[in-house]
Image 1: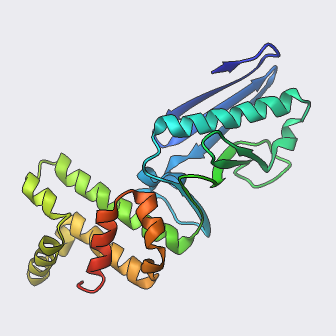
Image 2: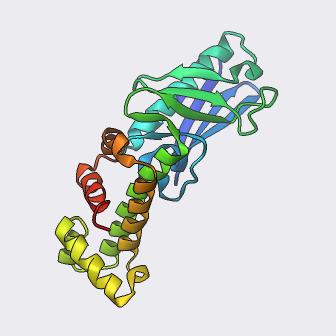
Length: 231
């Protein structure tokens, strides 16, 4: 929380996959949010892919996105203190100390409504201006990771969990499951299959570097790429 003598303050907190920023100036209270599900790789498994998207890299922790939100709050504080009316905050771009730029707007995308939303549009450790297909390819990676994490949490044997990250084991296991017509019973292999279809459809190899960076998992990216010619 930041408290100023001119009674402008802001607070930041994260609740599940939403970052909330509240800015208060006298009787004016602005509540803004950004969705980690929409804009951070680690939370994107269940997100919808829009025409234009952005994803913060997996390596950025909670402290990183909360510092970004605090910088957005500081910028709003300064603009309000300088006499800018709340309506003037619409489409404000804020460059944060991390090097990421956030845009302030509202969910209605209407300049006449109060601002209630901010989201990353450019800068470091961010895949910006992703189209729908690029987002779907990145999301497919995260869905594989989530499925593997779930199997581990459910107590599946460690050697079997490790096999999900081994190319030869994946080929053999897929062949065995196909023979028994039971692929749908293994959520990890189902997620791999979805990723293969997604990547093959959208020529993912052209975005290999970005997929490596946003996921921070070059091994997984390499596995999916290798499976394109095998599954």
